[in-house]
Structure formats: C-alpha cells, structure tokens
Image (tube, rainbow, N blue to C red; front, side, top):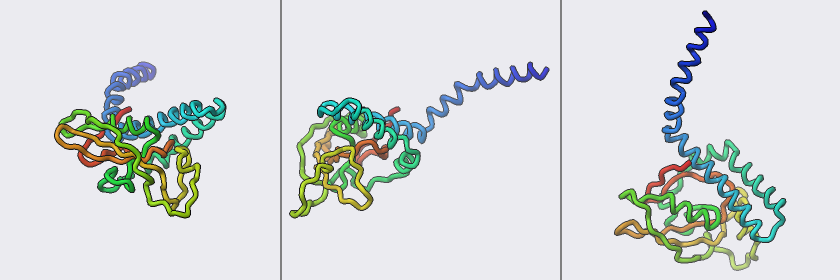
Length: 201
C-alpha cells in the first residue's frame, strides 16, 4: 500500500512538473538573472577570440577566459548587477557611458533594445569621442586603458575611450555613448531612456 501511495505521489509530481517549470521560466526576475549571466559568459568567449586574434598562445587565452567566467559566476557580482540602478540619463553622456565588452558588446546591447513601437532601432557608430573622464595632461598612457579585462580598482578613475552611436526609432534619434572596456563582470540588464530591453536567455 505504501509503494502504491509512493508511485501516486511520483505521478502527481511528474504531472505538475511542466507547469512548475513554465512558471519558473515566466518569472521576470529569473529571466533577467539568466540574461545577465548569459551575456557575461558570452563576453568571455569574445575575450578569448580577441586574445587569439592578438597572437597570444591558445593556452593563455583559455586561462584568461576561465578567469573571466569565474567573475561572471560570482553570486555576489550577479546579485549586485540585479540590484544596480544606472543613473538617470544613462548612456547619454561620456561620463555615464554604458559599459559593455568590446565592439561585439556594443552591437549586442543595441540589438537587445526595442523602440516604443516594439521595433528594433536603427543605429550607426559615429566614432570615438575621447576619454570618459578628462585625462590629466601629465598622465602617461597606461596599457590598462585599452585592456578590456582589467578591472578598475575601487576609486580608480575611468579613462577609457568612449564610442558614440546614433540610435533611431521611427521619428526620433537618440545619442548613446559606450565604454567597451568592461569585460567579464555581470552588468545590469537595463535600457536607456526611450527604449525597453526584454531579457534574453
């Protein structure tokens, strides 16, 4: 009798499992968390590709990618990205540039966006517009300024070169700025003003 009851409970669980799973997939918080983690891990693949294209040994590039992935999987980092709220006007000035990873990150972020009418925006790169923050005249060039895997220390000023894009929705054109030297850290899944950004797995 106990065995029959056990089988009955198992059948009940199996019957409702698809429903539970579908509810989990519909959970907006879980979707955003998945999108943040997925994009961060994808950045690590871009880092490896850049490393190999730069002529580095494949073993070293694999190690770099592994280190990058560990940063993506850090629970506290993902939690911080989930709670993060970019400033008002995010992406609209050099100082508040949207942090992404390499040109691939810029294109992927822009591909995520939706205009108010639900359509994808049209965009083109205007060009580089100088450092994110004014660079002191006496400051020497540092290789870390062009190293997307270098993590800025707490309180360290960001002097990365920023890219400017024109992003158009039907009748309105927005100007967005990107800092593409931030790889391997979970980033908030937010949209700049005038757009939405549906989460992707």
